[in-house]
Length: 298
Ligand code: ADE
Image (cartoon, rainbow, N blue to C red; front, side, top):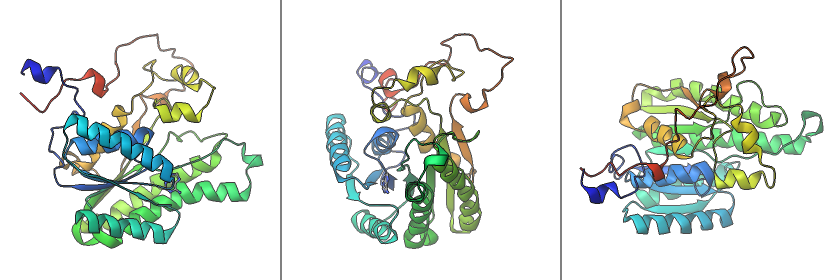
């Protein structure tokens, strides 16, 4: 590898151009994990439509990602559209606009979601419904919209982003229930739509994935130090450690996988074993674009 290439920062473990001329919608693609997924898709040549309910977040994310595209001299296109995924007509509008703009729709990444902390006894019906409608119904509408508008006739690949809800989700029972619903929905849709050439899978990141957006959500509470103790790697996860799995699932390398949910949590969801105390170690260091050399030149 030439030394000039070594000094560049890679933006994927996958080869540049892998998704050349493909088209993706990423909900919540302007912040946190969604922004990482958007950037990796763009780096791989995929044109991306990011959709979010919040126009300010969309605008801010768009400006930042476009500056990054320019700096890296990447040629894929980024578009944005405000869309409330709870509203069927707005989801339809998103599908129509994306296909009009880019001519096709190969991938959907259902990353946008939302919840609030509350004990179950205090959740009001309005709040419960809002969380279920965003995380479960919104994901369903996005999948159904993509299928009806494009993928039924042309195939495609969908990835849903869940959370680590495998042992229940106390103080956020609404989102735990909704995300468990998406896990099941993933399996049903995979079987109903396989004959159309549609694959649908999910990724369940652990609570240890650090992003500026996640940190800001927790305000002054440094929850990440506490979370770190529950991770068998004794460290937090990176956004890139999620986006690379999403890109793998969308890629031809995952052709034989559908209806599957991949846990991306460094074993955290399996770690409830009082007889084993995992010693402090740093044997599985973080993967992030900052620590990798470019892999598109040799
Ligand atoms: N992100 C959080 N809530 C959303 C919604 N209702 N629509 C789109 N993106 C969202």
